[in-house]
Structures are given as structure tokens and as C-alpha cells.
Image (cartoon, rainbow over the protein chains, first blue to last red):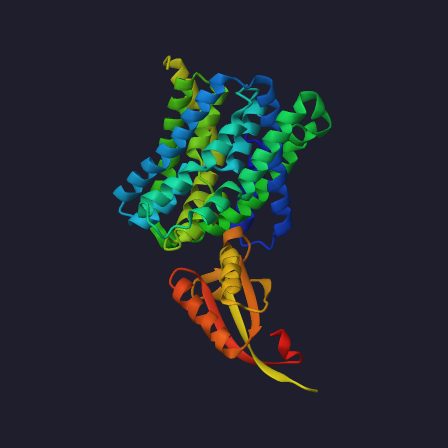
Length: 313
Length: 100
């Protein structure tokens, strides 16, 4: 099985970074690419939502919200078992309970390349999964402590960049509908992969920078960052089967559950849990889990989905 | 030239703190401030500003000595323990004292 060229761009970035190459993309370009990706994902989801929104979807959304609450609790238990202190375990758990839109973009591209259909309202689940883990993480760290400024935190969480772009895209897509969106369609058809390729090149460069910090934290963190995506994928896939999603949908939800946030959650955690070591979470989610999911995880989760369906689950 | 002495308080810290700092400065009554992006290396390692949460800012405030000291003390009490932050005071000369 040949690697998708967009994944090769990631490997290229990773290699260039590890070789300490001079190659650097301007920070503004990375910002631009991530904005285009998030908007494109949102728009596409919105268009499909307008076509096939239903009460059944509402029930599914509640289940996915439950997944967003359960995952960080699970991650927290694993981290505590590995001997991390409470605050850091809670902060890392919040990252792993939330999702990575970058990973989502890659799994979408992977499914398209394989010609596997999946429920196209998945972007809605990305938005739903992004938020609860942050709140659960804070509660795990300090309970209902009085010194948390919930109003400020609420602004940070609900009006954060990625959630805003996703929801904005969803709403615009839903209002415009399939016909109205035609002129913008290249955003999530022909333009999607080129943008994703450049985005992944930069992600490779960033991930290589995070890998350097791994030596500081050692095997425990490495173990967690490799184990947790597998556990998350299994939980996500089982939930998807329970919800009756298609093969593609199962693999996509498994990938979402396996992914760890590296944009929305770090920013929120820095303000809500300043005592936690931010590089612990970023090294795990960006340095290990993201590359693992891109290179090995996604094909693996598709196999998992096929296996579960073969077993009649 | 008619120059007057004021204190320049410079704060270099994580970009994540920008909103909080601005609120604090407003509450403490700082007459004005200038914020710019910064990068460098210190007690908490290289802060390259290559990534959102790795960004740094430099906040400069020109004001009366006692206010500058009050702000510095407030910052020290509130943020030094958990955030990458340094701040220092310097005497500067300004032309329009009523502004500061």
C-alpha cells in the first residue's frame, strides 16, 4: 500500500526538521492554511447537514458528547496509573479527550482516496468533541474550585479560533445549501488536498521540534502517547457501531477519538491550569500521537472498523 | 529641551497572558502601554514563537515610579510561579509628563 502523497509531505517536514534544516514556513502561512482547512471542513459538513439533518442525528450528537466526557476520564485514569501527578494528568487528559482537526482532515482525505463513503456530517462531531474534554480536565484537576474564572474560560473555549471557524463554516454551509455553495465547492474538493499537503509539511516541521523534548519526559509519556490513541480508537469505533454508522463513519469516529488536540486545548489549559507543564501535553499530542495517527493509526483504525463489522458488531 | 523623569516598566511574558495582563493594567490604572511580539531564551528554555502557545510578548508601560512598582509587585505575586515572565524597571526621560 503506497503512502498518500499528503502523508509524504508530513514525512518530508518531519525529516527536514529532524535534520535541523533551514526550511521554515512563515507563521502567517500556517495560520492561513489552518483557517482554510477548518472553514472547508465546516462548509462541507454544513451543506450535508442541510441535506440530511434529522432527529436521529440529534441523538447521535448526544452520544458523541458523552464520548467527549468519557475519553478524558479514561485518559486521566491511565495517566494516574502511570504515576503522573494529578494536575499534569488532568491537563494531558484534556488534550486526549479533545480532537485534532488536522488529523480529521487527513482521515477525510484517506477515505476519499480509498473511495470509502462516510457520514458527511462528521464535521459536526469534530465541533462537539472539541469542548467537553476541556471542562472535564479542569474539573479533574481541581474539582469545582472557586478560583476558576469560568466566564473568561468560557470565552476562550467557545469563542476559540478553531471552534469558531468550524461552526461558522457549518452555519454558512447549511444556509447556502448545495446549489448556493457551488462556487466555493473547490475549497473541499480540488483545493482540499493541496492545502492539506502544505499544512502537513508545516506540521511535520513543528512535530520534529516537539520530539526533541521527549528525552526530558521519557518512556512513560511515550507509552501513554502510543497507547491512548489505540484505546480511544477502540472506544470510538465501538460507539460508532452502536450508533449504526457506516464502515467509513466508524473509522472516522475511531480516528477522532484517537486524536489529541494541539490548538484549542493548550491555549485553554495554559489559562485554566497554569501549574500544569504545557510541554508535557504538547510533546505527547503533537510530537508522538499526531505523527502516529497520520502514519500508522488511520489505516489501522480502518482495519479495526472492518474487523468489528466482520464480527457482526 | 524640557525633560521629565518617569519609569519604564518592561514585561516579557507568554503571549497566552496578553488578555489577562491588559485587564490587570486597566484595573491598576496604567496610563498606556505598548505590546509587541518577542522571542528569545530564558529560564524556561527557548521560546521561539514558532507555535501559538510558544509565543512571547513584550509589554512596555511608562508611568510614575510608584505605579510601576505596584504593577511589578502585582505581576510577581500573581504570575511568576507558573508562567514564563520577567519584568524590569528603568528610568526614562519624557517630553510630555502629563501623558504619563
